[in-house]
Amino acid sequence: MHPAPEILRAGYAELVCTDLERSRWFYVDVLGLIVTEENDEAIYLKGFDEFLHHSLILRRGPVAALAKLAFRVCSPDDVDKAELYFRELGSDVRRLPAGTTRGIGDAVFVHDPLGYPVEYFFDAEHTERMHQQYHRMPSNRLTRLDHFNITVPDVPEGQKYYSDLGFRLSESIEDDEHVYAAWYFRKPTTHDLALTSGDGPRLHHIAFSAAEREQILNTADILGAYESEHLIERGPGRHGVTNAFYLYLRDPDGHRIELYTSDYYTGDPDSPVIRWDVSNPRRRSWWGHDIRASWYEESSLVLDLDGNVVPTRHQVASERAAAIGADGFGIPAGPE
Ligand code: XXG
Ligand code: FE2
Image (cartoon, rainbow, N blue to C red; front, top):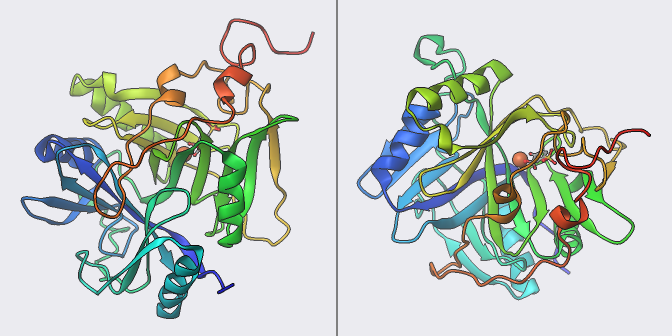
C-alpha cells in the first residue's frame, strides 16, 4: 500500500451559495471575515491570523452544497503521495494544476471513500497575516479556520478511514454498542475533523476560531441588531467534548457555521483520549441545555467532483435516540 500523505491541518472549504450578495452580508458584515479576493462568481475569505490566500470560498450556484473540503499537507511531495494513495484506493482522483483554484498551487482533488470531495494541497499564495491590525478588527473578529465536521452514516467506518490517513483521536461519544461521534486531529488541538452520526455523506458544519469568547458573544449581539436572531441555532454555550466555548449559526443557505474558542493542546504522543458515554448530559452541553432537533438532523448537501449531489446512506445509530432521557430537562440525569 502506498503511504498516506502527511497532513498539516484543515485548509479551506468551498460552499455553493444560491444568493452570493446575501452570503456576503452574512460572512463579511456579520462574521467580519476578511475578503482577500472576489468577483461575480466567488468570494475568498479568511480570519485575521491566517496567512494563506483563503480559508473559505463562497461560490455562486443553483443548489446550496459543499463543493470541497481541503487539507493542507506538509510538502509538495505529499501532494504526489496523495495522488498515489487515493488511486490505489480506487477513488476518482484529479490532478489540479496550480491556479485551478485561485491562490492554491498544484493539488490533488479526490472523491474520497466516504463520499466527500476533498483536495490536498501544499503550495498556496501568501497574504498578509493581519493579527496586529487592531484598527481594522471588528468587535467579533475571527482568527482562523478551526475544523470541519461531517455527517457520516457509519462513524466507525469513518474512524478507520481517518486513522489510516494519520489522524489521531482526541474524544468520542459512545456506548457499549455504538460510536456516535468522534473528533480527530492533525494540528495539536482537539480536532481538524469530527465525525457526527447521521444520514450521509453530508456536511455538518465548518468552525472558525475566535481568540476570546467575548468576540463570539458580540456576534450574537450583532445578529440581534440585524433582526436576524433566527440564524442562531445553538448556544452560546460550553462544549463538554473539547471544552470549547461555542455558538452555532445557519448562513442564509442553511450551511451551519460554528464560532469556537479555547479547546486544549493535544500535541504530546500520549495525549489521553476522552470517551463520553452517550447518557452523559454534559457531553455536548456542559451546562446541560437541550439541543435542537435541527442540530442533529440537518446538514448540507455534498457534491462529487463533477458537481452532482452525492446520495446518502441511512445512519447506523442515532445519538439523539440513544440520548433520550439524558438531554434536556425531561428526565433529571444527575445523582439520585
Ligand atoms: O466542535 C465541536 C462540535 O463537534 O461542533 C461539537 C466540539 C464539541 C461538540 S459537542 O456538541 O459534542 O459538545
Ligand atoms: Fe465543531
